[in-house]
Image (cartoon, rainbow, N blue to C red; front, side):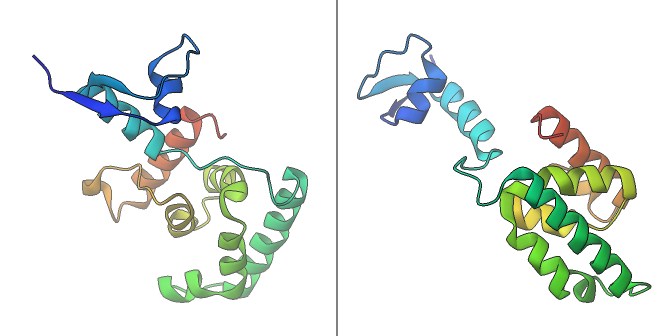
Length: 149
């Protein structure tokens, strides 16, 4: 028999029980709780957007183009990611993630560190670290799976 875990969060209650009945606490199989937490860990805390999506998209495009033009042929990863325009893009937070993923997919610009910094995840297999193509494919697949793109 599987171990049971005591859960008393409303978020879990919404995921575990579809009846809509709000209970204060539950005893549920540990594997079910683990699976739900693993899924929830991949998602942002959703709130009100700081800027309308079109403004974020336009700002991202402007900053990304400026960044690309200014870094040119720089090969230093730290120089690329510490550049002022790159940092401004990262500061846009979760709202910019769909634009980063689409740009990564279409233009193959170097958004992997920005995506990881914003989302706090790495959707690729650790053995693929350093393989830009595999890491890019994993991020795009993650975005599609989560219906972000």
